[in-house]
Length: 278
Image (cartoon, rainbow, N blue to C red; front, side, top):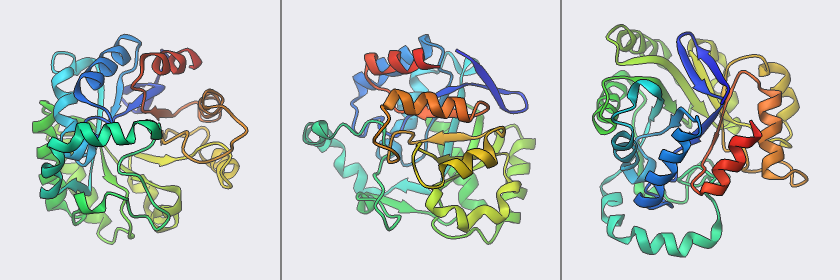
């Protein structure tokens, strides 16, 4: 699979695996199989967050790749985490998966977003303060869970308000880079939140955002960022209904040739289809 260099020295597969469904809507056995297949098919970029899998996703992914760390790119985020109530849900996960099985939302981020920017699972998740102390604390938790001593990308996770202490965060990011704990610092945001953050976009090494073909701002975004490095998530959520999922992915890869497109591919057929597209 074609590789791209989003940040100097970090080479990612053009197609990345979005791990939001890991141990959420997808069980452990299926997750492990999908992660192994993705790796076998040349996918090296794996996107995580402290909140994914109700706090358990990083641990599973870290276990799968513990002997392949130097061959993969790991990204994780801070700002949202599973709270104590999420641990009570663990025994109920198999039942929840059966109930949700017909929804076919494997390509959507978990927890699902509502129009007001909050998730349907807000009672199980907690937003933490976006400051240097929480940033470092979350990073250490991610490193421990992933069984690694560094992250390739460490991103702020979809803050709902403008970041007023950007200097503080960037200073911490510099210290973490100097110590070898992270290689790049980024911001993950929804396009609906762009106006909150665009004044300090240039302070980050990488931006991660949703951009399904067909949304109103797609053409303008492609004009602005086509040749720049980006990470694009939820490529199938929203946008035009006149394109198949495969056509949407092909268009994103064509329109954003220097970007990683994240897909949550947890069936073998789905994964192989997407790999063939790129």
